[in-house]
Image (cartoon, rainbow, N blue to C red; front, side, top):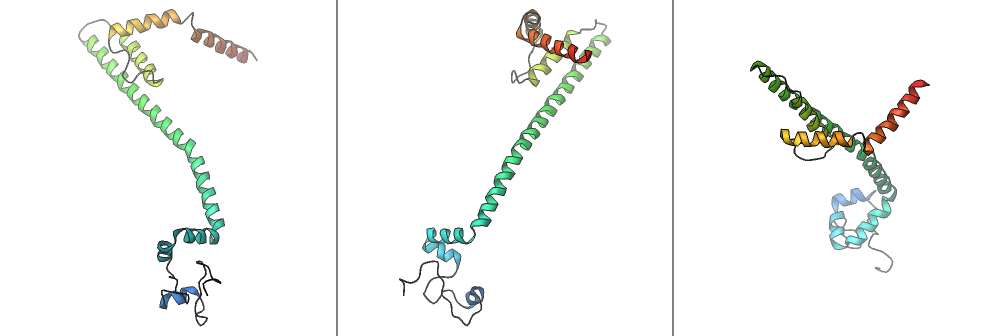
Length: 179
């Protein structure tokens, strides 16, 4: 009898209209195989997986296609959300830094000292370094670092690659505006 049937074959009493009705009364089929999927899986996992795969091939394929599509669709969305939150974080830190610079300026003016525009320039350099992820800590931390950065950037500005790119961009802008 075992040569005619495989593991996936279920033989039930013909009096029962369906397998579900038969499962309500019995745990084994007429060949002695267990009817519960978990029990069948524990006896022979590969045969049970093969049986489920054969029965539900198209639904499994459809689910995989949908999950892959959802994964590909959400990847740019997640990157965009990270970028937005990063930009908001930088803008918030910029606003806090500008507020601190304004309070320091107001304190200097209240003490009768002259206005120091380098405070705002230092804050702008901090914003630029944060925005471009140049360093983890804010740069410049003190006035000496600020002066060094300022003079290095001012000497590189008219001679460096940034100036060439800017001049190309400005040339394109002037050509576009004349049309």
